[in-house]
Length: 115
Length: 111
Image 1 (cartoon, rainbow over the protein chains, first blue to last red):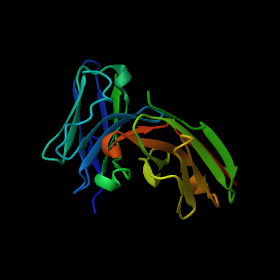
Image 2 (cartoon, each protein chain N blue to C red):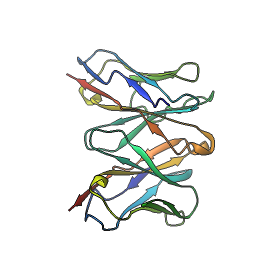
Image 3 (cartoon, chains in turn cyan, orange):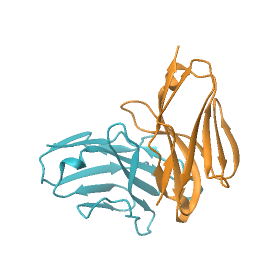
Image 4 (cartoon, chains in turn purple, yellow):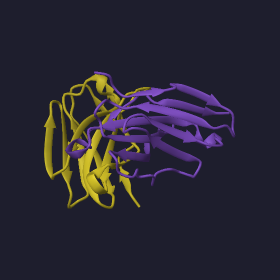
């Protein structure tokens, strides 16, 4: 079946512009996660959604970052007034949730470059 | 705060056994996962420990000791294709959904 997809695969933007990153999780997966990975670094937790529960936004680095998940499926991560330090690969993952929440399936990521 | 520590690099020869350790400090600890990531690729799930003890999946095994806040990933019969970064990740909070990753261990497998 189809895996997690993300778009765009690459995004170059000018400092100060807003960007939207999209994630399509695996069908039937109730949990969806966003992470950020800088070159050669680990994954930084940003936010997760689980079913109809309120999302855990505790990892968002500033109020310039926001995310929504519509209809329990597609998610969009929005970064407003981008800064050069926002440059990174943004990874989305999904999992079945419940007792299978630990097995996360990752998308290919969106490489964001802020110039 | 929440943090996981693992060695930055490990080098081993083909056919050998290597152990990658991970110590964690997380509130509301739920379980420990391991992921593999090749250069330019996305992380892929390897193993999970929700309870103390050893979990075996083919050439890979993972261990957890909650009392020691410690776990490890054991890779046996190393192959060149195992050269990659390996991340431990701790689930925490309600349902264990909030996942904090370590900085990763870069494994180099030599012929």
